[in-house]
Image (tube, rainbow, N blue to C red; front, side, top):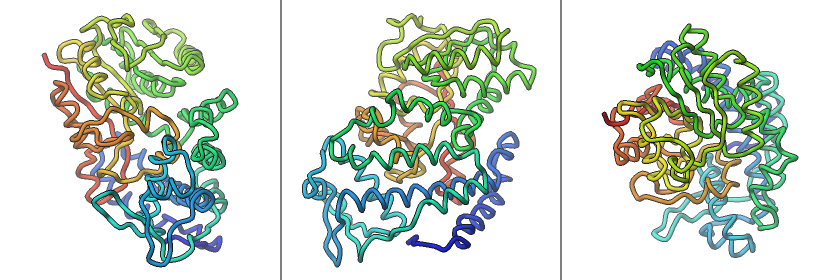
Length: 408
């Protein structure tokens, strides 16, 4: 269990483990990814996990007394006792308790009616601030993740009580600057998703000229990572058309400005809204008209994953490729620090479920992605890097590109 540590101990958090993981990962990763997952990135990942852990402890201590001294309770019982809003609180609180149990701060007691939790004594009270200070010394480009997590932590109690919506906490106009900095290739945590996706398309793009459709392009960082990488490789001419789509108007406007500014002479750039939860044909996307569908941390929030994957398959030409850069859940129900923020959003929490590959909302395991894609008719499902092999030694490796081919 992590507890208060003096400043000199905080400076050692993750240091030895980052070196061990990097040493093991380097020969396993493809050459194009080796420099991305260096000691600095891995240690930053471990530091951020510690930071979120300390924030979660703060939230739980404020909103819900935890049973102690051999007593235990289910999440539902805790929500009812503390008069939290069940619609808002059940999923995030279940995640928080699993996250704390995985770190040893709580005891988890499996039961037929759902896990029960208790504590041996009062929860520890470690200060998050020294971890942020250490991160700024280690790699300051991760600061947007810390600022967002701190912002969310302050509003979490009100959200769990039903006093404010998660969408207002995250996406009110006053929060736009947070997302501009978070969804950026200057942000060390988020940029890795874009870079892995760009490498995957560079390696898997076989047909030229290609028509690329990006789903959920956000503020444009994924498009920039891909177009910049192809330009550096002398392959930008292989993109005949790049259809950038984003449903949030403010994000779409900003994304278009950013991409056009970086690639002013690129022909075939188009920008517009596209809702992946509605039929693509109704929104101007003809069947078989796209060579590649590209999405960065988007498809996991589809309301109905089967429906969205079927729409993607229809819009792809025969033999076309779907490439998703996703945060990967290494094992079923394994809590991931990113969920601390995104559990506030209703689409993340409330997807249409499937017993095999969509047992809960949020991120999917490699096996769940493979099952979902194959059930939708895709073939040649692959992962870059090989996260199934990697998790044997690095059980919290969270990033991969997922490729799948539309049937010919």
